[in-house]
Amino acid sequence: MSYVITIDGPAGAGKSSVAKILAKKLGINYLDTGAIYRAIALILNSAEIKSDDELNIREALNNIKIELQDGKIFVNDLDVSSEIRTPEADKLASEYSAVPAVREALLNLQRVQIFHGSLIAEGRDVGSVVFPDAELKFFITASPEARAKRRFEQRKRKGLSANYNEILNAINSRDDNDSHRRLSPLKVPENAIYIDTSEMSQDQVINKILNIVAKKELN
Image (cartoon, rainbow, N blue to C red; front, side, top):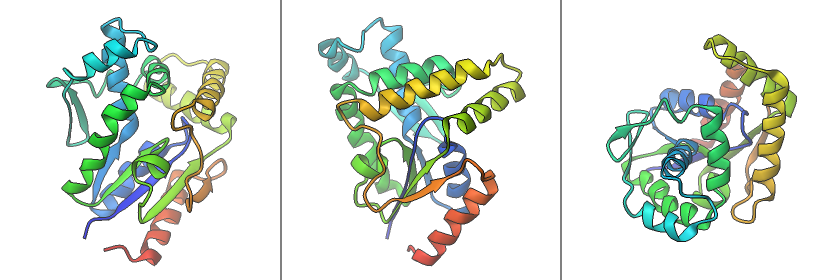
């Protein structure tokens, strides 16, 4: 029998990295909902369709095909896995994900992934909206300063330009937008296990979740 584990949390909390590793260790599928929204946001923005133009957004979405394959994301058969991992894509995703037409179109795409087997899904409303009946829910967060530091160090490791204060301001802005948007705001899902990772290493977070999963005895 398939089961779902959800991980919600704010931008920069490390949800994606943790979810990927957990999926491998548990031998289940991984669903990166944020990647889907970033891909859609980039496509709509490149087509010069504004986030307040819901009529044209609905029309455009009818002609967009999204596929998830081996950890990569394809839009109309084009691999956009690299393009979506930028500050611009992150900002655009926050903007377009607040549009009802976008959330409606992608909700079913996310839910049908369970038919491919058990999965771990991460995002900002997977435990509260997409999979409200998930067997296990987690909310992973950290202080804005801790998240900004991680983002800063991550970009430096990749040889990219980085400014800590700019990253911190962007995270605070994203938190405010995600928490106060009218549709599916960021919140701790009902029955979710809250984990503050500000003073935790990635290994500590993963081990903590694995111990909880083992006690749950999911099948």
